[in-house]
Image 1: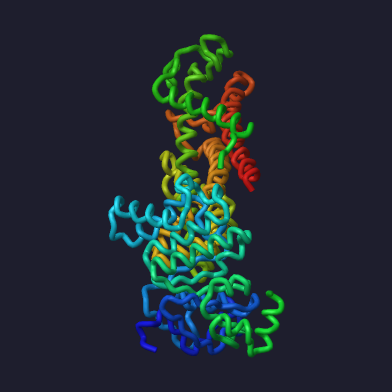
Image 2: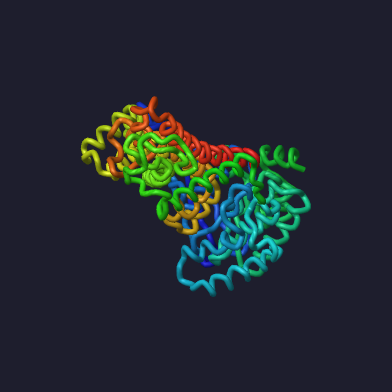
Length: 246
Length: 269
């Protein structure tokens, strides 16, 4: 596989958290991720499934650069990835409007004047189909689905090529879920994106993803195209997950 | 989110508004010259002298008008010092945590452990008594720890919100996260703390002046006047009464605002 077809390479990564505070006598290390190895290909939606507590979030933090792996290597072939969080309630700043939130990455980037920023923000808000009368609303005036649209717009405004979506629809109603999933697929096609889509909902992963990784206790136990893994799971763990989820 | 004014807030705002109006008027105009001693000693309240006159024959109403301004100015600048420095300390310790937090908060504890009055006395004697700003510095210092602690808790609670992580991923600087992303979300705690601090400052200034280490004549703050009034309780009880009631009204109004803000916050939650 040529390297330009990859957006992310995770090479035998292990890592976790240090235990014990400033005055603790023994400093421990709690390893959460063990020898994880996978790639994200250009344009694909890669699902990451597993029960809660298997280290999905820890892995995400390492990919985002918020946590250093203790061994192994994470190679990005694109700009820094952006993230869409599960809980659209705490991922938007309650003090500011939707428009402000989407503009903030551009203000920080600092290369565009106010007029250009507004133009880009409005274009993006239209792209994620946020109703125009919500643009000037603060998060607590928005519904869960609208908030998630704002989060997606905020993640996309810097034009990243790779998005990590950490359970982006699990806090939403089923009908809203379907709309957001459709939007994510649409955006992938329009903006040439790749996703790492984390979820514990196997139905959602089946609907959206091209390939899937199954994670158990910090290890990838199975990976492959979604149909293959779902129809012919090799691991006992995957079978159990599928039985529980479907 | 539409916020409805509750009754605490309404009454508090009215009283405080009136007090502010009085202060503004007092700065530009008083019915008599506040320092002139020519209106007859110990005149009881009358239409000519609303609050009566004191032992030197000065018009007390005029002096209260002026004194309220002095008290307000001292209290406001005191709390502002406490709030600004306290917020800075709280923001840094709460957001970054770690060793900075440990060191600064232990210092903060030490400052809290000191009786605030002794601390204020110490600062006044260091800066030199008799200057108006020495009271402000002394009391301002005393107010830092409580603000620092409240704000630290708030910043520590907010720092793990997803929007903070999001801002970090966008490449926002720590300063921007602290003051643009987080500070506006601490206002709901900062405002009530400010009103409580303001009241404490009014009372603290009054007690400092009462002890004779606050403002010096010919300046007069309400606290200073109250200490003067003490020696003539028998001959002119209206002096103590009118000055005292003014302090009570000032504190009561701002206290109601603080109470109202907190009640409103509970409603929203």
